[in-house]
Image (cartoon, rainbow, N blue to C red; front, side, top):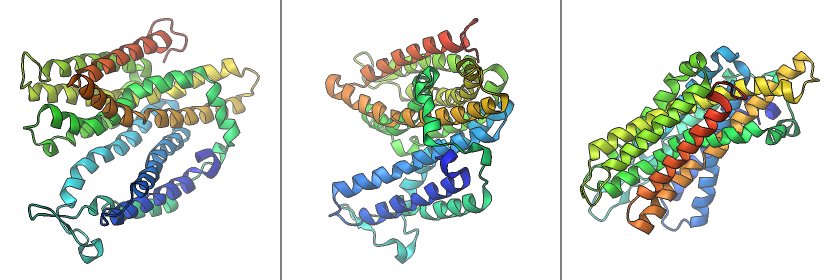
Length: 371
């Protein structure tokens, strides 16, 4: 959407569109008769937040030169990913108090006599969304050179490395967003004595900060190398998690060992998130001259920027499915075997596949597209 509408217009419009589900959820949860279909539509509208993230990354890709692109993408995405942690920390707090007074509606009465303002889970974001939309409209710029039709951008579907990077980014960002969604439930099922609300937000916080703070490493050492070592680290971290889960030998498990390994896993997903996005512009800078050798220099540079931005947006959208598949895998494993171990072993094998793909194509000596 960025090359069609422009970064300023699309960011402002897509941000403002999130006011609808934020307000809608706030009103819907106050009525016990609200249908499932209504909630499904509101959830679908929340997806524009993910679209906003994807398009913002594409917009960033047009602005910065290669030497600083990795860091710029990492900062933008890391701060954006921080929203997951902020949500998991803020929502349990704001639903316990009448933040908006009479404007926020009446609280819901609990069976034990307590009260919760569930609607605040939606309403709390309204002022921030409004300010952000206005700031985007008046504070951002559109790039004239970034204009391109949808047909021009769909050329990325023919690029082999687009699909390879979808796999790698699913391994990094897909893991981050999936673990963020499933971490609280996994703690609750495996360590029921632990107060989940004290720890749930820490994993996404670590992952977001590591992504924002480590983009420079890929700019310095190369995204392919950093991604490869990130996957090796994630394999070790998942194996560590498996050792500390409750088992026949240790029915209670070891929560602090489990927690430490998961924090390492979140940290490594953040590093890998930054490095994979740094790889994409570097890959396309090497690939486009081979694929389209007849282009003049100016057109070639524009094509590199356009396809890099489109691949960044496309891969981020594909990888977001991790938010569904990881919690679903936990549930399936627990229902079939009584434990989440099967899902975690599957994740470990997937990371091993990702490491091999990264090594073969990008990080080994003599790789087809070194980066």
